[in-house]
Image 1 (spheres, rainbow, N blue to C red):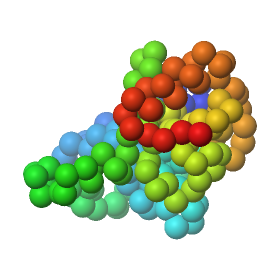
Image 2: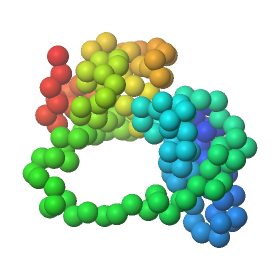
Image 3: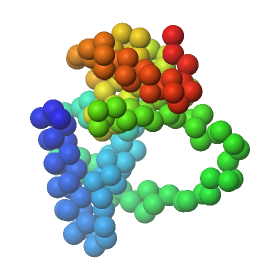
Length: 165
């Protein structure tokens, strides 16, 4: 895990403790991330929630942005799967695990960069070009998977019914 991501996670944990105490209710690190994402979505034009780690982490700035956020709106609702047509949930995203890393493809992703489809490395803010193995943070190429690892990921997605070229 990169030092940059470790710093982000530490800030989310710290703010979770701080706001839980201030608000006298449980605020998780996930709640902090979601609140910051929602509060800054328009100004930063995020593609998805992990895009927040593309910006420089600043604990006080994040705190000021979310300290009055209505966290109760994040509670969500639970809907029984049987209310959805067969196959709909799988059509929206496909997840696989390879070497303890979780990858997800969002079907009909609004941003086809860097490939269509492409995979997101859960918790890392990285996108994988499923044709070349190149890894991106935002639009910046930062690394490339070796051929064996790329083929392992592609094989798992194909087994889940994803069509790859």
